[in-house]
Image (cartoon, rainbow, N blue to C red):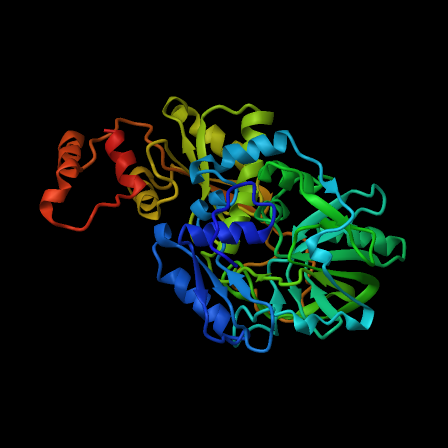
Amino acid sequence: MTATLASPPFLDLGSFLASLEHSGRLRRVAKPVDKDWEVACIARWAMESTAEKDAYAILFEDVKGYSFPVVVNLFSTPEMYGSALGIEADEILQHWAKSLAKPLSPIAVNFGPVQQITHLAADANLLSIPAPVWTPGRDAGPYLSAANVITKDPETGIQNMGIYRMQIHDSRHAGLYFGGRTQHGAIHLRKYAERQQPMPIAAVIGAAPAVTFASAAKLPYGVDELSIAGALAGSGIEVVRAKTVDLLVPARAECVIEGLVHVGTSREEGPFGEYLGYVNGAAPAAVIEVTAITHRSAPVHHGFVQQMPPSDGHVVMEMGVLGPLWFTLTQKLKVKGIRNLAIARGSAGLSILVAQIEKAHVPESNRIGRLLAKFNSGLKFIYLVDEDIDIRDQDTLNWALSSHVSLPDDIEFVKGFSTGQSKDSRSSSSEGQELVPSPSSSPVAIVNATSRSVVREMSLPDPSLMSKTKENWAETGLPPLNPRKRLEKLLGSR
């Protein structure tokens, strides 16, 4: 791979990697690494030891025993996520709203790079793919953690695409864990089971960033995620018909695994380190019988390190919730008063929603909080804060919660909503549970940290003096300033 300048739209993984490398946000590891422990350990250390502004992806060039390189940490910050779409982090929700309003249908082609090499039937060997063990010492084996799984409604013919974990069992079989009965792939499987027919499936690895983002999104049933991916990317996604199943797959992906899920077939799947930050126990799950594997002549394997939050998998999950939610609130319902939305960093991808409330609408913040609770996608907490709070900065968020919340008056519990999670950390290691469980019901806690009374002066120097100091910073001889956005917001609100 050469470090050439690439710009959006990124319609394949390679062009995005070239852009990251050009900007210094892709680091190569040349030393041989073991996929069953080193990949995950190196990736985790890099994430935990790097400031968000310096975050980078890692390309492992030499994976012992395999010809494919492995890339991780691609979307570990909102800035990197935004760069994959050619926008700033602050523009992500608006970009999602525009894309959902005007989808772009996929473009059918006769051939694509993903089918340069084709392995059919017994020649299709899952063990040739360098799928890492993502929680070394705890997972049951290697997993495809970022596979974009495509299935089709047998009644309407509309395809669905979602990111579901897949454990590699052997050369021809992989486990398929949907995570809940309401997942659209699980609905498709039940429909095929009612017809006593095997369900065709295609798992796409190393797709264009927009394809992965759309795959992770919480969209209504019956929406073809590939059409949303095209809108996100700014160009229709080229698709080609799979070799052995009646499905359309991204033509410029790195690899596609084709197969069938037979009715009534299951196999023990797990344990696996899940996105909540705990190991999920083993239980029976659906099984994919592989019928073909196609890939580029020189493919790259992409995976999510999505165990203990935060991670790039969590960022993709979060934006997949926030984008459609922002579209519904601002464009469909025309809700006023919400300046911005975020998922609190480290809150397991979904659990804590933070809403920035415009100053003029603070008096109705409780009503806005209850409205947000109705669109629950697995939330446990909703934090309402003022518009001058940097909702992506944990220090500022904690300050707002500590200084603006009066207990118990500013906390409201709204009951009867699905958590979207079948269990919490206290039961996540239990054995033998159903791996396509029904979501549990739980109240949502709305924490109102807006300033509804007289606002006290913040204990920061006068903004004019701060500005003067910044202008003359070079005179101090100290390292160059790189201030966090939180300080600019707080100074600007004074």
